[in-house]
Length: 327
Length: 178
Ligand SMILES: Cc1cc2nc3c(=O)[nH]c(=O)nc-3n(C[C@H](O)[C@H](O)[C@H](O)COP(=O)(O)OP(=O)(O)OC[C@H]3O[C@@H](n4cnc5c(N)ncnc54)[C@H](O)[C@@H]3O)c2cc1C
Ligand code: SF4
Image (cartoon, rainbow over all chains, first blue to last red; front, top):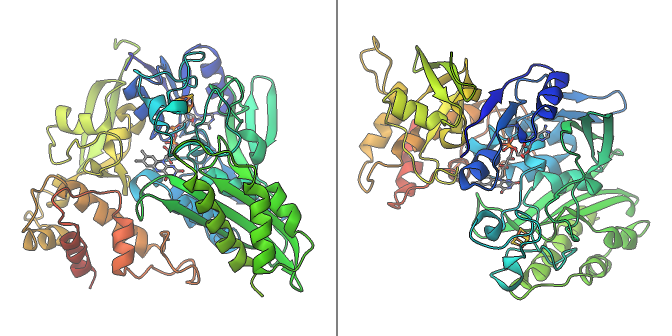
């Protein structure tokens, strides 16, 4: 690790100014990803701007029934929040299926969204990686790629985004709120993470120096049911091989609202728009759910080692959607 | 004057206020072990995977290996040494420590300090109604969570025992609950 300066501002404006004043600055949330990457030499900041004492640690209910989650809300507090558990179980389940109790007590909402890929070659300074060193190549393309992407990847990078939280937010149509030198803006969670294309070093659309201040969850129609399911190598404390988040509202057996997102399959949470379009306005059956899921996964282009992910994602999605649409 | 890469940090550790001048790269684990000679917390994987560095920070269990000490200024830390009984309390052992001792058959005890801090934190979390991923979603949100074996296993999943004594650890925790 390089020697480091450290500041702990108390306002968003001070934090942004401190960050802007140093080219090698990073915001420090819980640090559970950043410190790990600094130790490996993947991240080499010279200044840490600790944002955990900013007034961004609240979950507020909005007058319209929406929720605003502050950027520094801890993952464990988010998962335990009564309004999240009661109305948006998918979010609580996604967070609780990730990491361990110790990590969730420290990890923040924003830090979770901005955690970097778990691609082993990204972590290994001795291997080619376009995400770590643009233009150096991608060792995963011909390497061991069973954990890698099956959707939306490019010849420059086949990494997946590891966050479970992000998958639930994508299905909930959340909006990521940002503060930056040019003022504030909101980005839909589904467009916040990027596909790799030829710029895999950029995980998200965040601009240098921009700070996530919170996440906005829009209100959900009454009677909405939600669920998260995750498949992993062992029963707990492991990243997703594949996961699915689903949000469904039925009226007299007919689908009035449906949102489905896959995790573990792509460089970002993957909204299954084809599946949604096939189900919306219909009275689903096991067969029509299966067809709807197939419509999305037909797009998959597996790598040498990971065709199993397509089957896994298919089974998870059929199971979850089957349960949520059962009469 | 400290160089800009160093800061003075004050923490309450096991009930005692302590101060150190630290390089910002120092982790909470390194501060405890190397500056305060509290070697109960162990350095295992140093990546948040094994849980052997677990301590309680403002009453929450955390992996001290991934936390920068400077960012914890003003906070309260309890390590396994703190669970062994505060001075003046006749060295009263925390009941969990006693239960672990009673079942100490297979273990090398490397993971025990982290397991103990994690279990203490986990018991509080369950008491205050915090769910785990195996918690029945139909239970009322503010009721304490009943700690079944499945709950204990899931909640202690951030702590690994390389000796394979995990089953005994779950039994020790169960014994303390009932
Ligand atoms: C052993 C292990 C297992 C794990 N398993 C899972 C899992 O199964 N599922 C899962 O989803 N996650 C998992 N994680 C990842 C964990 O959830 C993340 O490390 C954590 O959520 C990151 O949050 P943080 O606050 O600690 O982020 P930090 O490490 O503090 O920050 C991460 C990045 O975000 C930036 N940042 C932080 N906050 C802001 C902000 N407000 N604005 C702008 N930039 C910001 C930082 O500069 C940094 O680049 C695991 C981690 C470990 C160590
Ligand atoms: S998949 Fe992406 S992150 Fe992994 S080695 Fe290739 S470029 Fe790097």
